[in-house]
Each structure stands twice: as C-alpha cells, then as structure tokens.
Length: 376
Image (tube, rainbow, N blue to C red):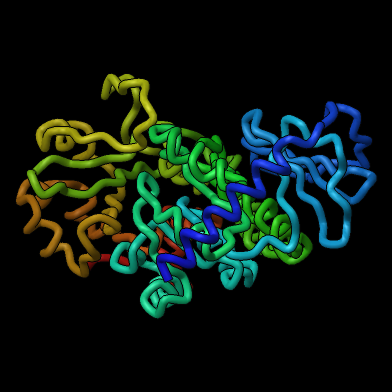
C-alpha cells in the first residue's frame, strides 16, 4: 500500500508540473448573475457567474466552484479551482463536520484530523470508529500520502492552520484546494451556522442547506426579546471549574455570551471588570475569588460540560468547589448544565438560544430542552 501511495504521489506531482505551466488570464472579467443571500454570516460571500460557476471569497481567498460537466475557464488566476462533484473531503475544522451531517453529505467526508475519542457527536464518532471517516493525524501533521491516495477533493481547515503555513502549502502543492473555515470569527452566533449554505453549495445541494438553515432559525426569529429592558434581564454566568482549581469563563463578547443576550438574558461579566486581553482566545481563567465577587448574585449559573463531562446535581457542582454553595443561583435552584455536544453541533446554535430563552423566561418546564438540563 505504501508503494502504491508513493507512486501516486510521483504521478500527481508530475501532472501538477505539466498543468501548472498553462497560461492563465486575469479572472476579474467574470459576469455575475447574482450573489448568495446571507442573513448573519459576514466572513464569506458567494457570487454566481453566468457560466454556471460560483466564486467564493473567504477573507480575500477566492475559490472557483466548477459544476460537473462545465469546462474550467481559462481565466482562473488568483482562484483555487474546486471541481464538482467534490469527494473525499478532508475535514480539519471540527465545527464544520456537523454541517455536512446536517445536509446529509457526511459521505463526502472521508478524512479528519480529530480522533474518535474527541468526538461527542455519536454519528461522527461512529463513522471515525468504523473507518468510514479515517483519522489521518492532527491538522499540524496530516498523512500526506493518504490525502493523495484517497484523491482528496478538498481540505477544509480551521484558522489554526495559519500557525502551520507550511502544512497548508504542502497540501496545496499536491493540487488539493485548501479552504479555511472562518466561522469562528462570525460576530453573530447564527453566522456560524449559516456556513451550512456554503457547504451545501460545495456538495451540490444548496437548496437543502438553505431550507435547513431557515427551518432552524425560524424559532429564534420568532422570539420576542427586543422589548425586554436591560434592567429586567436575568443575569447568567457560563463557566466550568478547571482541574487546577481556576474558573474558566467565556470572554464577554464571545459568541456564547452573545447567545445569552440574544436569548433575552444578560451575561454577568463585562470586559471592563476583567481587563480582557485582545487575543483570539474565546475563554479565560479567573481566580475563584474573582468569580465569587462578580457572579455570586447571578440569577442563573450554566455549567459548561464540554471539557470535563456532564454533571447531574447541584451536589456534584458544589463538590467541584464548596464556595459555589453560597451563590444565589445555587440557593434558588437555577443551575443548568450543557450537553457535551453543544460546541461540536454547529447546527444547534439557534436551538441553544431558544433553550436559554426558555430558561430565562421560566418556560423550560413546558418542553424538553435540546442542550440544557437542570441540576437538582
């Protein structure tokens, strides 16, 4: 198998050398026939061309999507060409896997940079366990031979790849287009989920992706929260206790804190209180004393289970740090815990906001929530 892969590598590189010498023209003359309508996403755009192709722009990186049966235009300079059908996709951006599953295109993904133990989504975990989706090493050191042998049609990376530019360059040198998912930079939580439209377009089923997105966001868009005065909003802290005793919280302005605001609540922490550093991290650790000072009067505590596992009782929470017993939310029984799949299930962003709204509006008893359960 290794000999076959090496021969395939030599053949691929040889073909690249030949095709790379073709003269290409300026791609600025494409006639557009409209653009993809986006409600929340701001980190990508799509222009539809009269020749049936689509031009995707992600932070200045451009991709030309060429439908099956359509000839690749001569003027593709400055754009990576993605020919449809797009098969054998390598996903190194964990949050995107659920989007492929959501549109029923998980069979298009055959490789990943996340091992089975690190998946909380049962369908994905089973696919990796069974080998339907092959783990080929971390994003920073993928198995290049497998990428070539599997005839990878697209490598989908997270922005972490910018820390390993040589890996991106190496993958591209094999003729594999590399697309960097920037959904984590979306300012609106539902902007992350709207990337499903892009992956629907890539896999040839945009209509299904658009319908799923519209269906998922409908309940959120029907919430009546704009008329809730700031003074009447319930306050909430979102956190977990680290193994070394710190309290890990989401930064103010992070998309989780924005979901709380969109749900009609108020995130208990502010940037001014915490002297938040301007970096790419979405979380920060604070001392227990600081957490007590800022959050002991919060109306709700929401425990983030995605790191150290779910808990089922207030007693288990207090066991992590006895100081929590003195918190207002603990005394009133307003303590909730997230499901472990919350962050990996990107299609659930609107559901999470609706869950939070039900909690803040005291309507959680009227139906089962998707991502939250109450601690007793």
